[in-house]
Image (cartoon, rainbow, N blue to C red):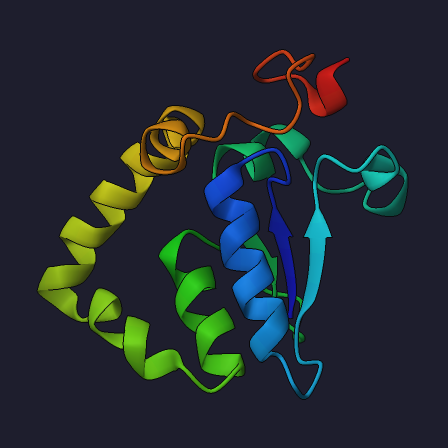
Length: 131
């Protein structure tokens, strides 16, 4: 599975680092959408959609988003049970609503929780690679 994440987001980076450490069988490919070569490597993907929320490309070519990505990623590294409740029917509704708010305000939330600003201070929100 290929996970497309925002490398400017401190919380997103922390989660990717945790996944990377636990991915003993190399089941995940982590791709930073902020990489300058991203649009060259993935020209058919909509950068703005990917920037709005986390996405992943399953091995069968299916594109998934949001907490479905989180659950499948952690499942791939043997810890899916931790996130499984977020996919249960009633909890899923509220968890997805919360995630959508988080995704929209991830830089502010990251700063409030970690004290870290996004890693690219020259960037303009909504523009790939700050251009």
